[in-house]
Image (tube, rainbow, N blue to C red):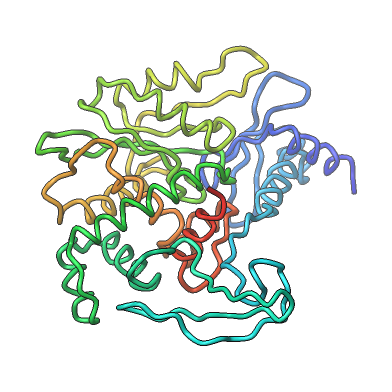
Length: 368
């Protein structure tokens, strides 16, 4: 390893690499109080420092960007697994046998017996005392958060032989969204250094409100949200506070439109307080033909609008529907722009199992 590579590693480890967009990075100089621009081209990285321009070598700033990208790829994942049915839930012995079925009006549940402790048990973690099966409940949630109304979900389940009311579907959504939300807020996503924020209007009890959402640019992870009465003038600093607590850090770049309340919230929460504090650059002027556009946030807004348009309106500001949409976006819905992965996978949170809803509910119930 040559001296330039060693200096590049030191710069990357000190978090002196700021990502502006996918092709543009700024690296803080070690010797002077300036930043160098490192640009990705079809021929590789180029830097505006003298070492790269005049000696035509791979400078320490380019090495710093390369090592920084490697560090981002080496994210240690948090893995949420489905409940293991291969061991006894009392003594953890793997010497178990099937011992018939336990039936109710709508579904059957496998019963096991442990040969070590002689106890019988069934595994239905998170769905105890529920008349419907976990598959029916999670199918209803999946249909609802992909755009179906409560009554359409009810009609679909009736075709499957499950007779319920639309109110029952709502009770499932409220119960399990609240359970998952309390659990997932304890997990820190590994998000990038560039965040975006935007707003869209929605109705609460027939009155116009505004949903502000903040998303990570790299992973498309929906970090935080806030509902306010007005556009442009309402204080949205609480959303920035929540995002900083959830991610465990501030971003290097914060992209919004030109709304004054975003500027005020940035000054209050993200602007550099002293030379030891992390610097966050606020990009306000959005140009849709340039790199610093807000198209990714507009796509999230469209996703929310697809869910919201089949409802008359939300009943209250803290409705579990908004939290459910956030959970569905982050942990369930795959994105073509992420090569078929979910934002949580990109942020180092892997949900195992064919039915991610069941995995989330099981882990939330166990961790509650």
